[in-house]
Image (cartoon, rainbow, N blue to C red; front, side):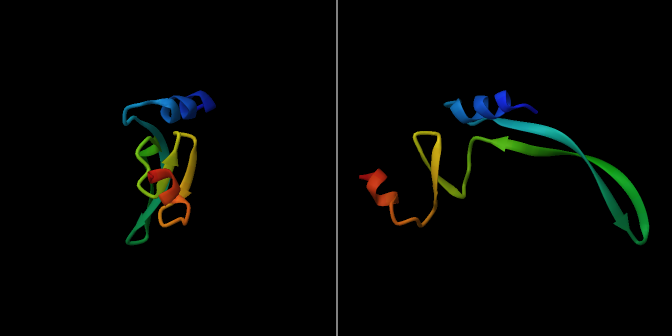
Length: 70
């Protein structure tokens, strides 16, 4: 993953996602093992932030959001 990947997702007009492989340690019933999982690293659809011109964001519930919806 590179900074260019971040820019591509940020500037994209469609919903795009970037996945990365991640190794994690798991323990089940005192048996430890390594697991490889695919994680969603970058996602254009952020459900926790209000986007302003695709670059700046505000947290949902922020007092200035009505200024941008008008």
